[in-house]
Image (cartoon, rainbow, N blue to C red; front, top):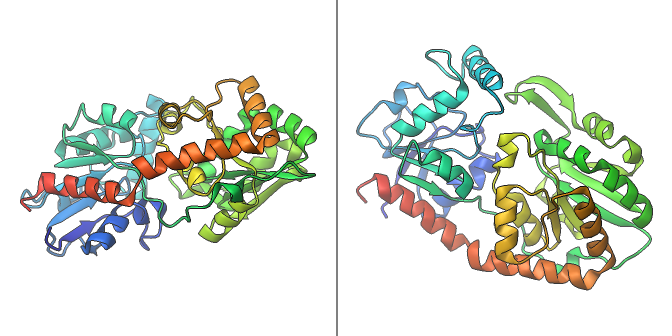
Length: 352
């Protein structure tokens, strides 16, 4: 494939957001393509994201193919009121021009008008394909994380054990659904909890209503607030915390479609870092756990409690779980597989 000049409407101006660096930027660097964020320049193809103004004239050139990298499940809003409010807020903030309508309608119409759409899970693909047949599933690259030996992440039973949670603050409130389990376990196993995330976040559109992450966390886990440790998200901090942890957890609020339909990236990262992980029963986590042959999914509070106890009390079992997860990564999440998928998308819209 020849070197491409790729116009990109990024998630972050610095191109450092995970959705930038682990996706298009990862592929472009590996393949030697040029990323151009000034869309007024001549480019071979344009890649749009959820931060794009879908009505911008930059997307109107019929001679320039448009690829929509739609990572999150915006076609499945929480409810009609929330959907319209998001569309209105984006109009008032200047992110989207044109008429006011529910945000999912903007996304739907842009999917229809794009030459190709990329999403991050087969569950999202089923929804998007109703509006664009040329839809492709591509997960994030996790090459920025080391592939750690399972023995590093699993600690022998000791006087103190640590549980890891990692992610964006917007998803952190999932822990309140297992707060009673965490409270009971913390006493029986002398557990402490590391939350690797941003110290603050904005509740609306990443711009409005600033919240202190630790205040939200301690509100939901008040009974064990003295056992919580909030760690600023950096690659180094995440790796260090993983090396000190016995296992990881990903409890999510399944009533929120955006979270229910999220892909398996966080689970794969935990396996890559060499620690077992327990999750809520979202479609992606169920699918991957079954395929890998691990006991990661917890469908009730009793399952959360039993699975926590087994992993914390039986290091040999925990290591076997990690090995299965890492075997899955080696087979299904090699960098070459991701790069080839990106190649296929661009080949589908261009004469290369």
